[in-house]
Image 1 (cartoon, rainbow, N blue to C red):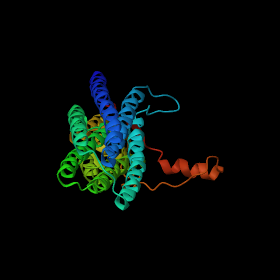
Image 2 (image 1 turned 30 degrees about the vertical axis):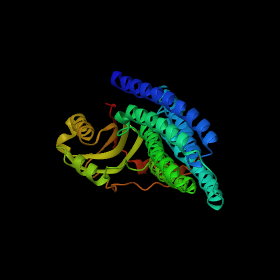
Image 3 (image 1 turned 45 degrees about the vertical axis):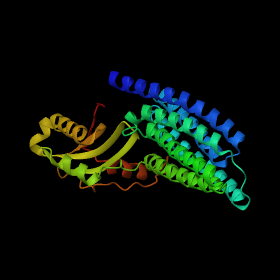
Image 4 (image 1 turned 180 degrees about the vertical axis):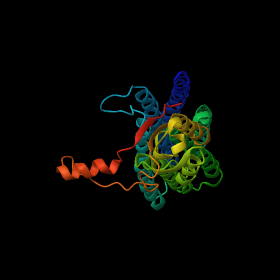
Length: 329
């Protein structure tokens, strides 16, 4: 638990640092975009605004995730970070559409741009973006919430490079149409970054198997534990970036019935070491008591059915099962 608190504190500190830097960049680029009449710089400023929005949401999600579980939220607020990532990705699409719309008008009627101030302001923005990105990079590989914010900052750093290049080209050639061309490139880059974040967030919200894990491989690992005959009704899902959960029915061999606690502990340790699955719920079944599939088909059931419906549901669960809930590591 102390390690988790230390991790959250580290992430929160880096997010606050990035928020300060990104906010300064936003102010500079909005003022500079209006002064230079550069749509590319204003587009970058819009992206920076979303960076600030993403960073603030990410920081709020960490705070919410620290709240304890309750009767109404038995997993606590850990999913808040995934929801924040979804919002971040969704809002990016809106700003990208606005950028492309304005760029189209400037294609039809290019407007003069002050290239030198555009170059200087974009250079300052790039430096700020790189500092923010370096602060977030450490936790961007294993935390979806931080990765969504990190992608915002990296995307903005890339567009700042483009704005710098456009400023130089406009200064030497006077081709003002380069400004809306770059704006279109920025808009498309924003779309791509948003798609990646949205895809992962939706995958988690729809209880998809964590990316990089194959349920068949996990099942084989469980079957490889001494004393396990088979496994079925396997479910694997992501609660948040640092918590992967699993539930399954485990068929324990008769010779190991008096040692089933040790078998379950061995399963938990193997799953944590190999797949970092830290929250397990395992139900022990008698040999030959059930013959279920690896993945259980779910069906809608009435909340208050007839007595026959309730009896069918009762028998469907198996009368000889015993549950074992693994502790989170």
